[in-house]
Amino acid sequence: MRVRFLGTAAGGGLPQWNCACAGCAAARHAGFGRTQDCLAVTCDGAAWYLLNASPDLRLQLAAAPDLAPGPGLRDTPVRGVLCSTGELDHTLGLVTLREATSLAIYATAPVRAALEGPFPVGPVLSRYTTVRWHEVVPGHWFNLDGGLMVKAVTLGAKRPRYADGLPGDDWVVAYRLVDPVTGGVLVYAPCLAQLSEAFLDVIVHADVVVLDGTFLHEDEMTREAGGGRPASAMGHLPIEQTVAKLPAGTRLIYTHLNNTNPLARPGAPELTGAEIAADGQVLDL
Ligand code: MLT
Ligand code: MN
Ligand code: ZN
Image (cartoon, rainbow, N blue to C red):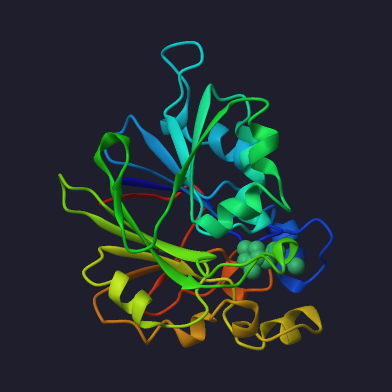
């Protein structure tokens, strides 16, 4: 399995257009940036799937040589998108894919309802391309082109703000992806509100766990942005509460870094026991 980090920032990116916090100012000064969280994965090198579709997708795809179109005029290795949430920073990029001949979208029932309701990207896209919906049922394995085997588990019921009041439980999921040829296992969990049994179970024997690095500190919004809610109340356990709590020997790579996170900045100190993802980083599992 090959994994490419297309983007590693939380909503807003780094720097965020309207933010003058220390992290955004440092990034601006250094000419450094992170685009919004999105991963691309493949088993066979030919069929690629996106894990979430970030608002920065067009530039992210253009910067990824593996994902270039061809050999036919409109051939693309991008087969579809697996949504881990319905949040705007994970779904706005769907609009960018409207030129596709067809597009497979994998989402849980509540996330699909959001994308066909209060954020009607599904109905809008279907005027431009053939949208093929695949319902993700947590706990059930499914297969993707190229051989990848995938299972989702529910991590939480935090709805996007635009979907406030919609029913359902499976709003935030983690994906476990397995390459049956190499045996490589990746878990992707960019929104993690608690170290639940379901999460601890889905990471067992994973080679790499890509997880929620939105915040370093529980009180980071107060420290860095002059106010705001605690990290865990925003659905994101801070790194300081996960890094030493997961089974030893698990390779942890934090992504979805908010611009307030001191570890997201250029020249940030190294983290002991885990890694911080970089835009463009590639893993072979
Ligand atoms: C989140 O990760 O909690 C959301 O993407 C927040 C947002 O709306 O930007
Ligand atoms: Mn987000
Ligand atoms: Zn900022």
